[in-house]
Image 1 (tube, rainbow, N blue to C red):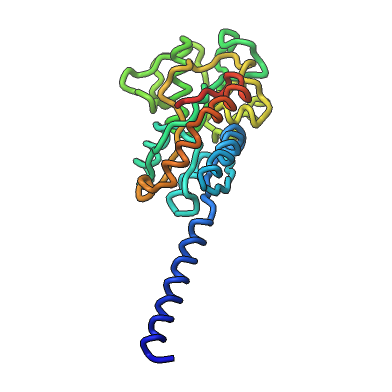
Image 2 (tube, one colour):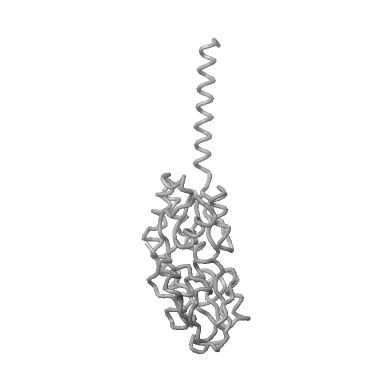
Length: 264
């Protein structure tokens, strides 16, 4: 074998290895972070549809709201599906994440639950009320309570209201701030708690049994998030298309019967 032939053979081998490496990279499944419950159930359907378009997906479940964004920012996930835009905006502001919204998914009207009263009107003075301890979901609940006439907030409080923004509280409700995932368990100890629908369903609560519920129209539609550097990659468009398909819409309507609403 002469020198020229040897060089050509080496080049061909290197090219072959490069193509093999590219193929392996494409075969590596996308890791999608979700919270347990409806987000995970819906993504099982998305996975089936995405596979028809050449996407392989590995679903990674989380039990809290903090880790999915941390894992995405660190590169341990390719995307996540569990949060609404006000929460993502706050996370980006507080933690400096380079994460962005690439498509809307579903809406979970937050519910107010109790094992001790059957209506908000039955809450006694000094009642202990559980709310999520993150700024956006906590504020979301306070806005619901204001809408129901239980409290009044500072006009400038906006979507991120906290108990410190309460300026009128006739029943002297005491707010207990807990991790959102813990709120279903708090119902044994507190007079009432606000529970995000995904955690309510996971805990066996029926949204129809909520003593009050957020209005269907709200700024809290959930979304698909990816790192900013990935937002224009072809797989992102395919993933959004699979999620926002008619098959997924029908699954949401059939499976959750109004407890979860398609937001696309």
